[in-house]
Length: 114
Length: 109
Image (cartoon, rainbow over all chains, first blue to last red; front, side, top):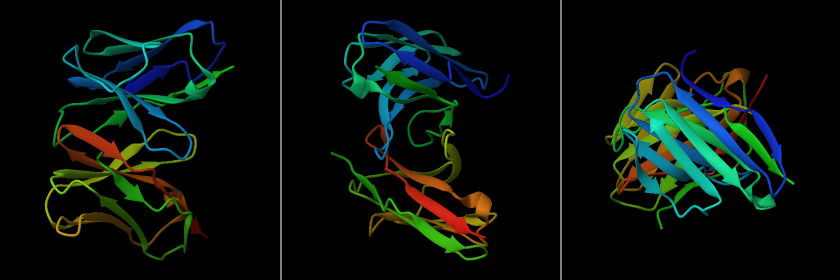
């Protein structure tokens, strides 16, 4: 495996379900990110982890809970979501943060909340 | 509130023409600038980055930065149908990377 891999590719869940998104990066990068992409809206940063420490939590509702057990793996735990949470969720990694923050994205999870 | 603005398009150009994509940003202290390409149903892919005023060329792509006017452009020379995608501008300032909504480009054969 190379690059950034995300599973699952598609997810349909009810508002009472609990599910998790998984991301793994094989690039040896130091930072990992969760982004949300909704139709016709800019990419929204949700969480940033640098060397396994959360450095950014962009006012995301508590029904989204990230976990970063090591520098290669990132999870997004979902519970009691709302229909407006339906979107493409993208994981990304970068070698550096800051001026040189070049992101490598995974293929994304298309989430539908019913 | 830092803003990054792009025309949503769609922008249509004939094959072989130059496609010009523009991006303006609100924070005068912005320090680095990125262009991502996103094919339909795929994730964004970094294609260009620029830090200093002026032009930066990479193959058929040229990024242009004008900090005084607060805009950054992406030129695609000899456009091909395979360049049809949404192009996202991203600007780094004050410890945050902000994306624009993207410009949809269609290159007509």
